[in-house]
Length: 88
Image 1 (cartoon, rainbow, N blue to C red):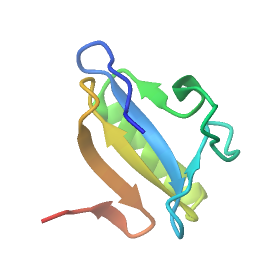
Image 2 (cartoon, rainbow, N blue to C red; image 1 turned 90 degrees about the vertical axis):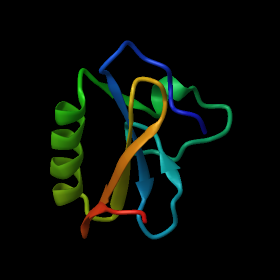
Image 3 (cartoon, rainbow, N blue to C red; image 1 turned 120 degrees about the horizontal axis):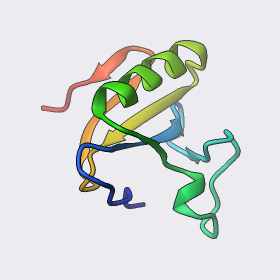
Image 4 (cartoon, one colour; image 1 turned 180 degrees about the vertical axis):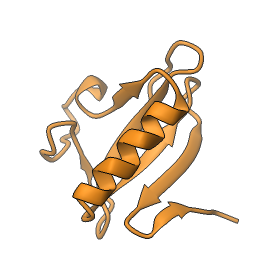
């Protein structure tokens, strides 16, 4: 699933189950193919707001992981209960 294209500096966040990678909607119900992107991606005015949300969310719900995308829909970072994932 492609991340949405947004206004400059905005970010989107995708939530998935850590153990399986299954994507969830914002209300933490399972994403289905026919569901809209608007139900899946959470939008934030900047990376810092997105990262703050993600860290708080993961601390409260460690069974999930989150991916942050920039305004162009490009991958920025991913977080899970172990912290930020670094891909080499």
